[in-house]
Amino acid sequence: MIRAERLKQGIAQDQFALLANVDRSYYGKLERGERQPSLALMLRIAGGLGLPASEVLARVERLLAGAV
Image (tube, rainbow, N blue to C red; front, side):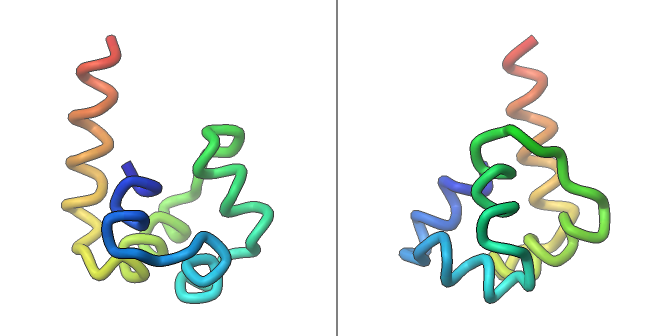
C-alpha cells in the first residue's frame, strides 16, 4: 500500500526515504515486506505521504483483511 501510494505520487524510493527520515535501505525492506515498521515510523511514513496516519493504517488493515 505504501509503495503504491508513493508511486502514485511520483516519488522515487530514495527521495521518499529522505522525506520520511528513514534509512533508504531499511525503507526498501519495508516495501518488500522484509521488515515491520514501528508506530513511530508509520507516523513518519504517513507524514511523508501527506496522509493522516489513521488513513494509512485503515488501508493496511483493509489489505490484510482481504488477504486472510
